[in-house]
Structures are given as structure tokens and as C-alpha cells.
Image 1: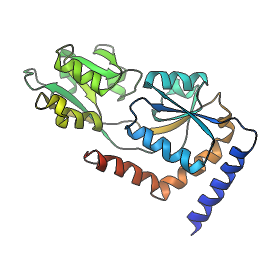
Image 2: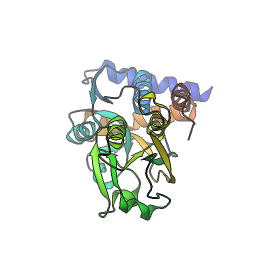
Image 3: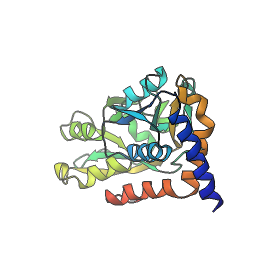
Image 4: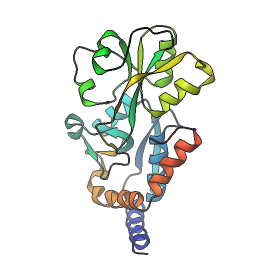
Length: 243
């Protein structure tokens, strides 16, 4: 009962903000409308009952617009010191565990069983994204920045690169999409996230002054289980094993 009352009071407070002279929330979503980050962002905006203007942008543009303050809020972000200069990461994170996978062509003969094996490959990664610290900071790896999983897998199939670094959704596409049926395999080498995943607001946005109220709402969604339900429903709907 106390949690329900707290959530009602939080929503009332946010409704008062939305009903005042504050500008609408400028919400940035991924152009891939089925991504988990979009589902998380939709839940948060709906619960805040804010007046909002939505835009759909590739990840690198979403990140850049947050840093410039031309959008207010977005999800699917990993915190770094450089990003924190312009983006405030709302606590708590909504994902604190997941896995990275490396996708290879089925005919690939070179082993990928440990980190050091990566030096032999040209690796496709999501443009602007952070992965795991050792990988991101390694100057000796050969990386190609791409827009999304589909572009990476398409280039992998055409032998334009050797490996795709993906998360759960990319893993599922590589294994089960009819488009690439039987073309790929998952490398034995895998690694866990070493970073949590957040909703972020621009420090140049009017929402920055409301960050404590926003964090209160987010905490209630996490503690009540509503956030976990959205995440679980996403995996279930896409037939993806929960990480």
C-alpha cells in the first residue's frame, strides 16, 4: 500500500510539472521501434503522463542530441565519464546483467575462444555504442562502426567483415531470422556486460532540474516490478531467453 501511495504522489507531482508552463519532453527513441530501450522509454513516459514530442534517431544521433540538449531524454545508455559531462544518468539502472556474443559465419575456420583471438578479425560494432571496457579501450582491434544488428549481419554474410558483436537481440536474429537461416554460428567466447544500462537526461534540458522527481518515479517502477515485467515481456514476445 505504501508503494502504491508513493507512486501516486510521484505521478501527481510529475503531472503538476507537465501541466505547468514547462516545455514538452523531447523524447528520443531508436529507429528500430521494437528495441527494448523503446519499450522502457514508453513505460517511463506513460507513467510520467508528460506532454511529449517523440523523435526516432539512430543511436549515435540520439547520443549526440542528448549531449547537445536538442533532445531531453532517452533510454538504452551505458554510463561513461565522457558522457556524464552532458548527460545525467537516472538512478537506478534498469538493466544490470546481460551478455555480449560474437557472431561468425558458419564456415569460419579461425577460432574465437578467448579475447586474444579477436585480433585476427574485423569486427562490426554499433556506431556510438559502448560495449565492455577492455574491448572499447583496445587500440589494436579492427572495428567497423555500423547502424544496427541487421546491417552488421548483412555485411557478415557478404564477407565484408568477420565478426559481429551483438547482445541478446542480435544473437536471436543471427540464430533464428529466416533471412540468414543457417549462415551463422555463435563463438565460444562470450562476455558479460561490465556496465549497467540507464535512462539518461540531458544536463542542458529543463528536465535536469526535475531529476530527483524523475528518479523517484524510476525507483518506484523498478521496485514495484513494472520495469521487470516490461523487460520480461519483451524477451518473451521475441522468443529470446532472458539473460
